[in-house]
Image (tube, rainbow, N blue to C red; front, side, top):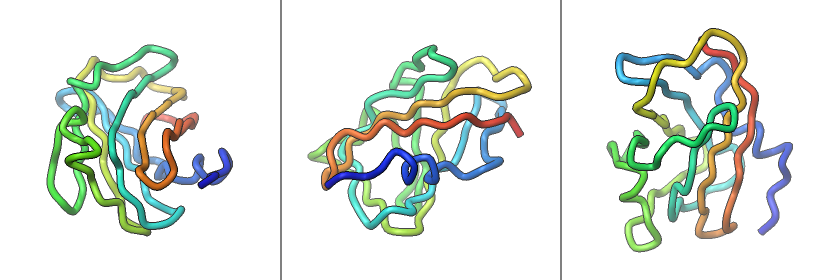
Amino acid sequence: MYISPQLLEKVFVKGSLKNTATGFEFKVKNVVDSGTMGGLKGLSVDGNPIPTSAVTVRSAYGERKAEEITYQNPLPLNYGSEITVHAVSEPLAAGTHQLVLTMVAIEAGRLDLKISMDVA
């Protein structure tokens, strides 16, 4: 299943990138089709990778560490649903940041979600 890069850019919820007490987070909304996340393989900010061990995902199904999302233990992503991706790290500086979220959708394979977003 092919998903255009232009459509993938729309999955990031505008204005959702913000610093937290332990790092930063942002939201992703499934605007493509119902599917299943079979893995969260990477997150980088401005070209700097964030270890997957420092990333958690919150959804309607609860909170899970990125490393716990696998083909054997997938995360349903219903059409219209949102997830919050949280990274334990240093806070982000004010301004625009380049985010790349790499995930595996069981139905579509590897997806590299890329966006430029300002810290709210």
